[in-house]
Length: 110
Image 1 (cartoon, rainbow, N blue to C red):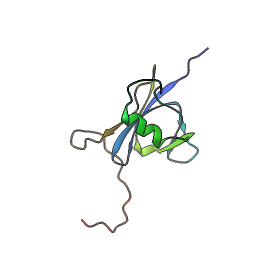
Image 2: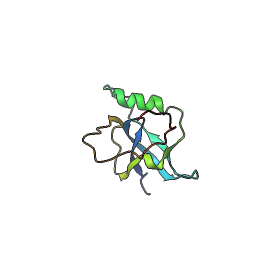
Image 3: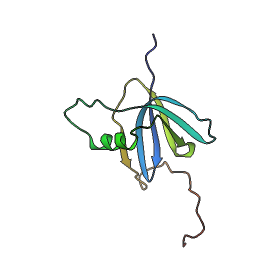
Image 4: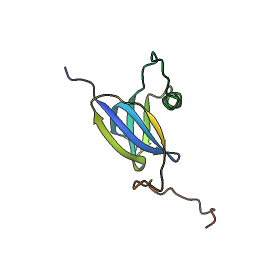
């Protein structure tokens, strides 16, 4: 019997970099989105609680599938075992990864 696949998905969201683990990743039926299902979180029985993972768990509570814009995805890896879900601050000066430019309304001042 084949083991369940685990994917690590890294993407930009609201100025931060999210790193989450999921059982399913696929091209979405909605044009321009990646579909992520079966989000994985750490065990509740552990004594040490990671506040970042708890925040992610609360943010994705009740979510069956997440649809991430394709241009926000940095990387998707199939991994052997689950790691810790993280929210990382975006290091603009040190990073060679840039988010796709967002649409502007034209009301911003130069």
